[in-house]
Image (tube, rainbow, N blue to C red; front, side):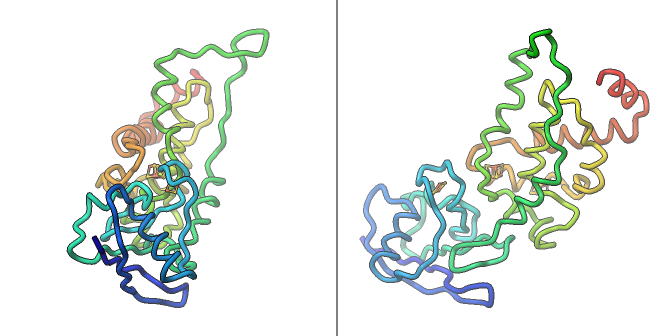
Length: 245
Ligand code: SF4
Ligand code: SF4
Ligand code: FES
């Protein structure tokens, strides 16, 4: 059958949607259709992708208005009677066609205090960790840095991007460090002030779009908020943490 794809074409200065009708067959995903259109009708169509397996996080875009990985969005899950819209992520500056400039995220990552392990537990320089403590952070390590959660977050969208808000992807990253059984760094003050965790009002939009099913709000943001409250407003707990470290 034939289906129509309404693809945003343009650059940082502006652009518009253009319709492309193409042949689609069973098993195709949105990225396949975009590639077919690129091969047959629009050789200059810019699209970023790499693995076509939902693992590199490059092909993020908005399909019918929802942040999605193009390579993991099956055409059989979309209504093909009407045009399928494909446009670049809205939270980041456009470069060309479906490609956005996500470099703000790389700069944000560098501002987060790095992993700081406690001194080794054994004379041979090794540590001991309980399996259940490891499992707690493993979920966060699944992140593929697709930035779909950043794209959907209203704080980032409204401030494009927010100066004092690192966004859900980096709350996940901070949680992976904070909850690591060996880490002794204190990020609570940074999370509260420079990283703006208080701006998150737990709408859970980020969790709903995560292709790795990371429970961003329940497992990362809410526990981090609790740590910030504990450390900033509960002096006894603050003292306890200092001694524990
Ligand atoms: S839960 Fe917080 S971080 Fe996630 S989308 Fe909503 S405001 Fe943004
Ligand atoms: S947390 Fe999920 S949605 Fe956000 S960047 Fe990582 S994989 Fe993508
Ligand atoms: S091409 Fe790698 S996640 Fe889609």
